[in-house]
Length: 199
Image 1: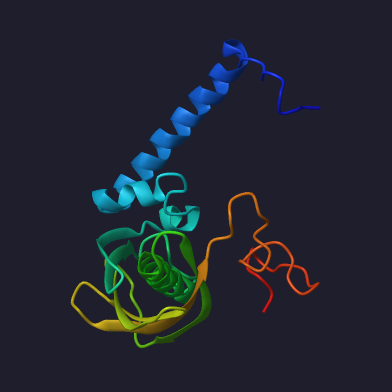
Image 2: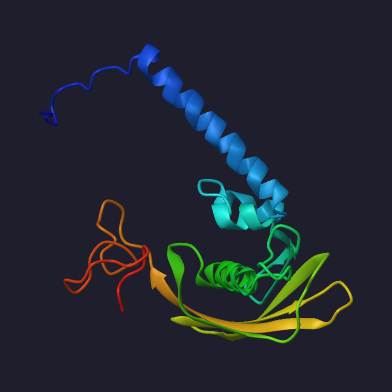
């Protein structure tokens, strides 16, 4: 039990040193992840404590531009194919959602976050080799919703797929408060689904 009048015990260097070393290792790993993913240097502090996400790393997505109005990234076909040897449709969707969500988060600004509520994609032609480039352009940047169109092209500039994502823009919960109704926890008595609030 702790009261507000007792002096807190001094941290033990022997106990705290491994935790601090682990924090430094994690910070260094995240910094390397952000650099490898091509995140512009001025945006790295924004992502310093969470990186770009494991799936972005696994698929080899590398950013070329990143603003609320326009985001561009590449992804290799190699390693991201389906059984027929072409780029997996889900990889198109991941590239689209990554670009649209990052752009919407930038538009949301400090103290807010973006939650994807709709993603659709139409596939026009297959990709079998090289890099795919996703170009994300804002369609609507509002106070509560952001919608982006993402066009995936091959290295010759042929359109491979067209996607659209809409993100709901929410305020972050106050520090120390449960994120209930903010994309986590329980909402309306229903269990959460995939880390997003049940709609």
